[in-house]
Length: 122
Ligand code: 5GP
Image (cartoon, rainbow, N blue to C red; front, side, top):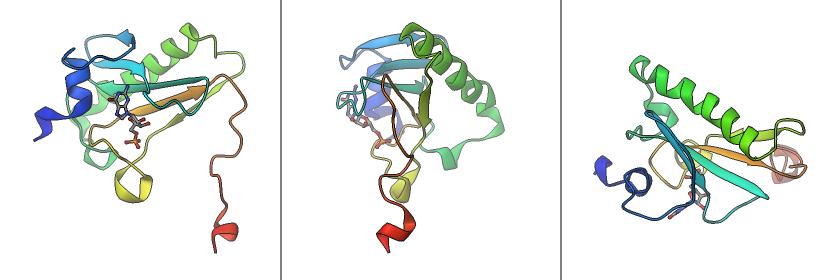
């Protein structure tokens, strides 16, 4: 059930994680399988399953995901060189955990957004 998401347990402190930022609306912690020198997940403190499930009632939280990402990027020294924010949505987006989250990746040049182009995949 929605109240049992892995990330909600991290928000509640029921599962250990390396939390780097927390406020009344969102929590940020390091990804357990980092894909870059800095890889942080920023999640709402309440469950929104996917980006396809957002509503107007979530707008404050959704905005906070971006301002928290900026705060974490500053903490991690990424503001000058930049970083990448990714939200995977459902099966085709590659979403594994059904609790909306923003990936913050940085610390090195990240290359093209996709590893394969449509033409290469054809
Ligand atoms: P998604 O594919 O859903 O966009 O991303 C889920 C992310 O959660 C993955 O990058 C994965 O490494 C991360 N993850 C999965 N389980 C855990 C966990 O128990 N702790 C942390 N910190 N990250 C996790």
